[in-house]
Length: 183
Image (tube, rainbow, N blue to C red; front, top):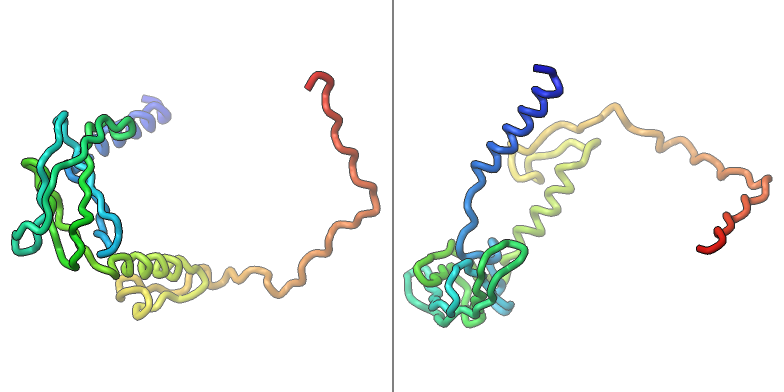
């Protein structure tokens, strides 16, 4: 077996292995972080039913706080699923909820005004942790596991050298290319 054939075979095997282990999509899909109390709240349910489905939203105690019927959306060309839309706008109080559509139960979701605060912190933390010439301190990075010494500490660059002068303009600029006939 040649090295290039072996590499191709291993690559194909890796692709098939990853594809075989891909988790199935949940039937009920929504914002994985949750929703702000005053925002629009929609979920999608993948179900082959050609008619509207009943749905309920329950709080952490299992009490129904909202209910209704799905709005049939139909075939989604991107996902290949037949989908229904659920408007959860009636769920306005802060808390943890679960959506039930037909016989399917979704993952818990939260409603809170500060639902996106962890995302902002994570984004800023990413930029801190990807700094190369600075030591990353545990107190700013989120724990000891993320701390490390400065990377590329010896590679300081040439920031002390003055910039190169602009090119001399002693030669006239080149003529603009002419358009071809018939274009």
